[in-house]
Length: 419
Ligand SMILES: Cc1cc2nc3c(=O)[nH]c(=O)nc-3n(C[C@H](O)[C@H](O)[C@H](O)COP(=O)(O)OP(=O)(O)OC[C@H]3O[C@@H](n4cnc5c(N)ncnc54)[C@H](O)[C@@H]3O)c2cc1C
Image 1 (tube, rainbow, N blue to C red):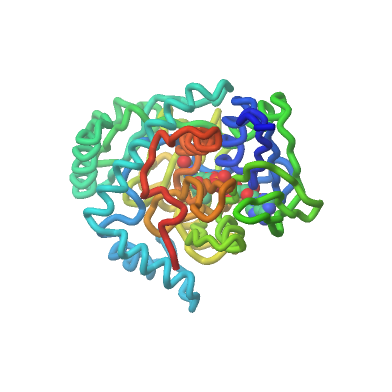
Image 2: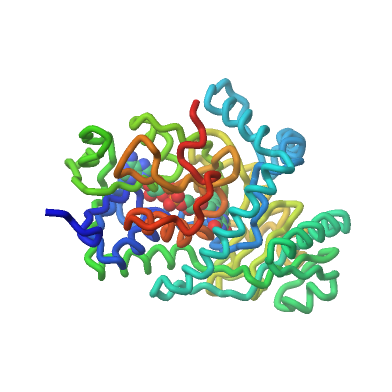
């Protein structure tokens, strides 16, 4: 008997924001969904303590011209927002080589169109998730302390216009008028009205609750260790708590997707980009809008009555330990942009760290690898997982249902790296 798509048993590996959004999209289409997660329910991983920004304005990939030079400069400052722990690691060397090759004008331009499409699709998908996401769609300020940075950001605003993303360049006074709730020491900003912010942990809880309501199965505390295979199809994922059979499988395991996919002969090169966040529960001032302190690469998000500061991109393997000097760098930057805040505001605040799955070309891997008939991959979103999860979910669920991808770009292909 021919099985209809609606009766497919979909097994999703990883309960981060990408996994849960994908699970929800599949469950809404009537598919039977099982989510396999090695940790306990709602553990504080990368999808929980991040800055919660939903930013179609972020169409410039991490691998952009000038980033290699800027990265090398930052390497020698222990408080800088970027760091690569020097080590002899073949994967890191290959990743760096690919990053450098991707950081050209023409490749960044091609990637920008795809990121723009993903960002705009995600905004639409956020509206139709059918849950209370808590997304505040009131815009983002890219704050610039120096006129030179503002001039550079004004060029980004122009590029945004060209891609159909509205942006407004504001001087210092206009920036203060845009968000008078917080004192800022800036030369100006670029305002992106389409952007927004939400509480990531609340989103994660709401997604899990809705999935439970739709009768999705959660297999927590179950680490995937291998796969049962038949020809070019997967039959089951093998886990620490037994096999989980399915008709279709989706790897959404963040930075851990690379070694998992490797077992299936796939190359998904990624480095873990460790970042930190510090959340003040009673901030001196609470902005209305989220912002990015451009020179410091620091994200600032009001989350309920709390204020979260998030930043740093540290490529030091999958070690999740906290670097005191990077945290100091974040605290120092806060006072540079928001003079009412003082370093001792952060006394007793526990820093959070998370590992972003960072591909070398700044684009996620979304799609079905050629080698497998019933395996899909959705990972590599780096600093954009919350932003792009609903679009990713839509693409994967469409493909699973036998429909074409709404963004059929080869730049997203999980087969794009062969060695
Ligand atoms: C400081 C910081 C700030 C950020 N700010 C933003 C922001 O403002 N906006 C934005 O869009 N993004 C932001 N990000 C990025 C965002 O957090 C990530 O892109 C996103 O969380 C990645 O989600 P994921 O589902 O791919 O991976 P994860 O959240 O890492 O989830 C993967 C899951 O797979 C599970 N898993 C791994 N291996 C196995 C296995 N063998 N078996 C079973 N399960 C397994 C893991 O336990 C994990 O739960 C930020 C990140 C950081 C660190």
